[in-house]
Image (cartoon, rainbow, N blue to C red; front, top):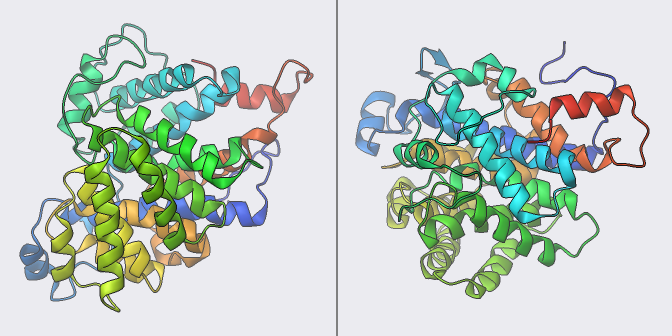
Length: 382
C-alpha cells in the first residue's frame, strides 16, 4: 500500500486543497512531536552538548525507535475520534454531548496507557482503539492522568487550577472539525465556536482559564488558517476575539508577544525563544509555537527552531507543526520525516476523516448501506 494512503473504497476522498491542509496540520504536529520526543526534558545546553550547535535536526531514538510519537499525538487523535463520534451520533451540534463524547474518547486513551478512568463505563469499540501502536505508554502528563482518573461523569470540568500545556497540545482537531462542520459560515464565527469548544475540551483536564483559553486560541487559529486566512491575520483576529472571555489576559499577552518576537528578527534563534518561556504552561507553549510559525521560512526550519530550546520541546514543536503544516500543506513536510513517523498512516486517515465527515452517508433520511455501516462501526456513538 502506498505510504500514508488509506484503502477502503467506501472512504470519500477530500477535495485536494482541503486534504493538503488537514493532513499538513495533523501530520505536521505528529512530526514535530516525534522530533522533540528525545529531547523533551533536556535543556538547550544539554541538547547542544549531545547533537552539536544546531541542536537536534533529525529523528533520533526515543521509546526504542526513531520517529516515535508521544502522548501529545495520541491525545490529539483521541480528540478527533471523540469529535467524529459525536457527529455520527447526533450531528455534533450540542456542545454538552460533544464534550461528553470527547471525554469518553479520553477515557479510552487512558485505557491504552494502562490506567483506569474514573468513569464507571468505558466502551473500547471503534477503529482507533484497535490501533495497537497507540497503546504504547509515552510518559503522559500527570495532570491529564489525574484529571481523567478522577472524572466520575463524562464531560465534567477538571477540579484543578492547572494551566499546563497538556490541554493545548491536543486541540488542533477542534479547529479542523469546526472548519468543516460549519463550512460556508463566515470564518470569524467559526473561529469563535472553535475557541469556545477548544477551551471547553481542554477544561476536561486543565481547570485554569489560561490552560483552557490558550487551547481555544489554538483551535481558532487552526480553523482560520485552513479556511485560507493568512496566519498573521488569523493571530490578529484571535487577539481581537479573546477579550470576550474572563481570564484571557495571559493568553492575549502570549499572542501579542509572539507577534512582536516574530517580527523582531529575520530568523528566530533559541536565545530569542527563551524570552517567550519554556512551554510547560499553555500560554508559553502557544507563544513559542505561534512565533516559530509566523517566522518560519519553511516547515523544516520552523519546526527545528520550535524544538531546540529549554523546555517542553515536543509540545512546542508539535503545535508549531500543526500551524505550519496547515499553512503550507502536507507537501511542505520533508518526505523522510513522513516516512519514518510512527503511526503516520493512522494520523493521515484521521485527517482525511476530519476533512470528509460532513459528506458521510449518515442521517435518518439516508438508506442504510455498506458505506453508512462502515462509518458507524468506525466511529460508533458514545
